[in-house]
Image (cartoon, rainbow, N blue to C red; front, top):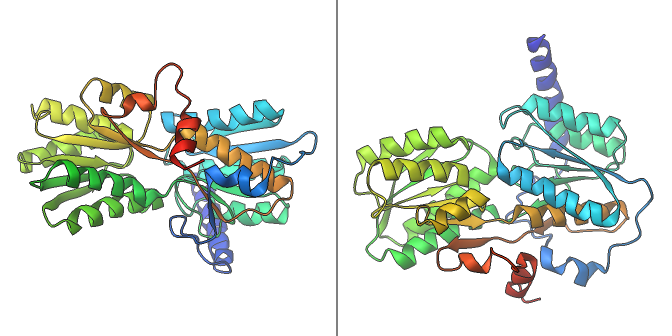
Length: 348
């Protein structure tokens, strides 16, 4: 039975890839047809009246990671405000590509009016694009893998995640030194872009050497093990950049176990609550917060504008910020309105 599904999945995927070649492959970081999230209402006006009985389907990578749960909270927050029905489902694990495809295809056949999808990889949900197009169901690709033929994408500039951290090293570690990267899942767009942004930026300065860049597969224990090995080989390392916060927290534990917390800095990505707690405790050095709840709200707004018949750019870029002990209080705490803080930073 498993072999039958695997063969069926491969055949469907190949069909999707063939169709994908008819469209220019999407690079969400460099796509010229883009708009910043903060300009949606200014350029497109208030959200038009929506049809009654609207159903939105959200398909996530997993619900075991806080980032993806928070994204779903963003979907629900705006849906509740507007009286829209939303279902948010995810695969059993972050590697269950077939399970995620089955969920997405089911939502098309069940009559959902628009889909918000966060693919496991750049390829596994490609077949859904054609199925949804035939059913006249808009699809919005939401962080962080990128379906090549996606017509609409909402998310942050992935490469900029790594660039921001590299610039921190350049500004705060004037003597340079050895650094290491813990990557996400091999080949996934976000992991590739974040890694490249960090590596190319920090090496351009001429004072830093990337001595290791290894996959952590978004897994905390695997990242702990990888960091332990790297520290044994390079006890003079000055820092790690990790493609997400779960991995970064595993690396923090490895640094502590090696009694190097006063010498080795660790950065993550996503801005989950445990990362904020770790920064406040003086353990994790920083994270690039991509504000998943706000991203979910923006993605839902884009989806509803599409259903209402508006034409939107192919990419709507969402915000991010490098969070350290120096600015953590600007983004958390009682009375802090993150949307207002970010709108002000965007000049609105």
